[in-house]
Each structure stands twice: as structure tokens, then as C-alpha cells.
Image (cartoon, rainbow, N blue to C red; front, side, top):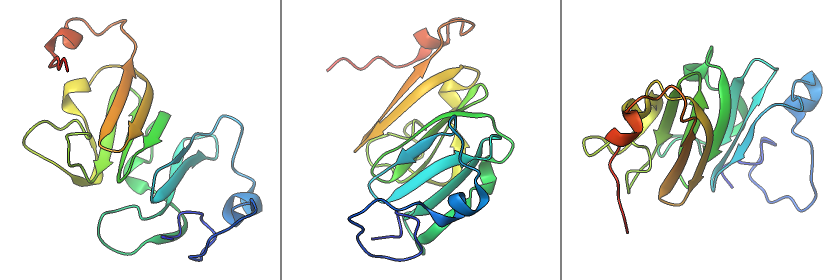
Length: 161
């Protein structure tokens, strides 16, 4: 459902099949990033980090039945990405960017904002070099390079159990 397979139709597939847009243009390379959540899929393509998404990309509105470029992230050097239940997290340049539906703070925006339809920087991690991200149901994990972060890591809240 939701078009999350990228084949421009809402049906189950029991055999792997190439996504036509990437096959036709031959733009998916060995260093491109692939991410799949419960209702959507994403990948960078073209060697320049352009992000494409398809499926139920936003909590409301129509599903994207085939890959479409996410223009909000054009120009960013995307290094890593993960997709959770209904949210996404990206490590790009010296920023962590997230968006989607959040019930448990998985976007990292703090107590004031729960969700975001558009990709938005996670302010508390700004300036940190994100090396890896992971997402699951109700959670996100961010790995940063400890070099050049100064005292920023000590400013983060520590939740122990």
C-alpha cells in the first residue's frame, strides 16, 4: 500500500522488480543511500545527493506512487538517512535534519514542537558532524563525530532509564 514500492500502483509484489525511474535514467549508484520506513521509501541518486521519496511521505495528503525529488533538501550533502514509522532523519553537512509525525520526541525538536511536514534542522545538534542515523517506532538514534563539538555533547539532556 501507499505506493511505497515506487511502481506507481498500490499492490503487493512478491518478486523483486526494478523501480523504473532509476532503471531508465541509470542514476542510482553504489554510494547512494537507501532508506525504508513502514509506509515510505527513500534514496539519494545521481551522485549529488538529491533525495527521492515515495509512499506515504506525509501524515496527511496523497501518497507519492512513484519516486519524486524532495526539493527541500536540494543542495545539502546528505551522508546518511533513516526512516522510522512516520518520520525521517538525515545527516547532512554539519546538521541533523528531521521531519514527519512524532509522538515521543523522535524528531529531536524538544518539548515545543511535535511534528513537521517539512525537513527542519535539529537545533541542539547544529554544528555537529552526523556520521550515522537510525530510526524505529517512536525513536531516533544519532551518532556524531566527537571531534570539534566542544562542550555541545555535555549540553544534551541525559535520560537514564
